[in-house]
Image 1 (tube, one colour):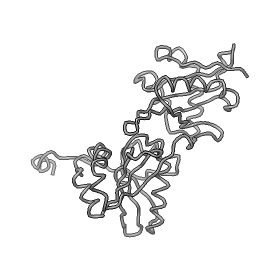
Image 2 (tube, one colour; image 1 turned 90 degrees about the vertical axis):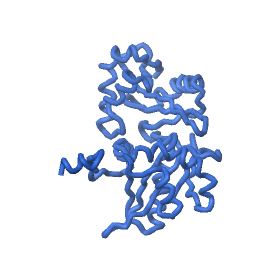
Image 3 (spheres, one colour; image 1 turned 30 degrees about the vertical axis):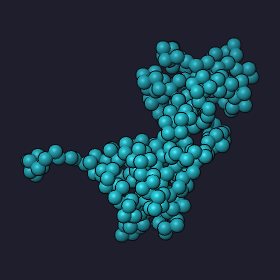
Image 4 (cartoon, one colour; image 1 turned 30 degrees about the horizontal axis):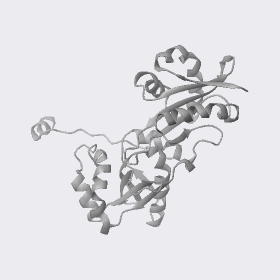
Length: 280
């Protein structure tokens, strides 16, 4: 089948939405990590992603694939990546060779040198050969040397803890070996692109590895290696599970890896003692 591919500008999204929405919904209803509403917001409202349509030549009603691309800025490595989600349509054999060259040129035009298929069909969901990652536990004896990188990567995550922790308190726990610090490296680069802080929690009936802070660039690229590392760490320490403390987005992100969110944490923060006494 001869196909045609074209990027759909945000101004034209509404004109084709009735055609593409059923295809998106069909795939997403099966098992996806993104919703139709989120896609619409990304390609039309916020314009952080770009929609591509692939259809049979001379028959625009026969849409064989939808692609959603987004540019991911890797600040630490200096290597932007083009992420690509694929929805609907048929197998890649009917369109891939003809269409991919346009995606590749778009990637080059935007100074990307890597393309990552985040979600696809029929066994080509992710090609980890595009980028290699290494996750390393940072020994206490070199912590002073890497301290600047640790603060740079972790501070945005620590700042979201609603004043429970400060960067200083987290580092103090690392120095006291209550917490462990890990770095994520991309390819053969010496500068880390991500970091995580873990601890082990001994509950009355179970011992768990806890991911307290996970931050950095290109988490979508290295999260699978992260999960493998956490699982290995779990077995090495005779634990029977892993739990992660984070924002709501992690629930959707980890669902496809068999994770569940069995409960939520509810809170109310009082600004001062007077307010607390008034409520009491």
